[in-house]
Length: 191
Image 1 (cartoon, rainbow, N blue to C red):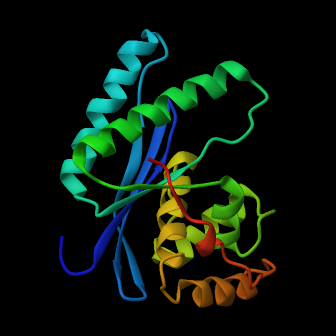
Image 2: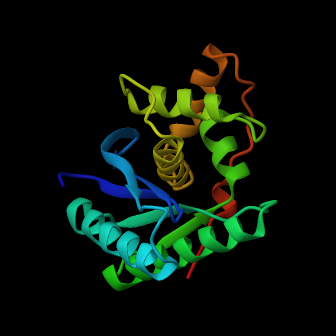
């Protein structure tokens, strides 16, 4: 898909799995494709996971990423939800592994800090920054899609691009307190 590299962000979930492909060309970022993969609530867990797996395989074939950035699990109050999200994350890891694409995991706090300039940013601030950084006309909906694009941007800025300066500049304009601390040194491979 042209020069540069494609980073696919994934926000895992069993009902909704957000994805966002970003083309990184030097210090420029452009959204290539984004959306949300969904399953119906009436299906069995194994059917829903199989469905998400197949849909994600199609996305991987379409966008051909060189790397995947995936949001890691965070502590959830509802154990049933946490298990379902963990299962969906496992299916996404499997799809990426079979496609030969390396996966990097990021904590929600790291994503907020990288994209909005501070770890206490709310969802709205992160969404507005995703829109601004990628030059989109609207905030990507639903939230899962914006979160996936934010994960892709987090990986891009943590791998030697000047995106951090763009984040700081936009954060000042949108009244989001910037920070000089970036999570690039804390990148870890998920498998």
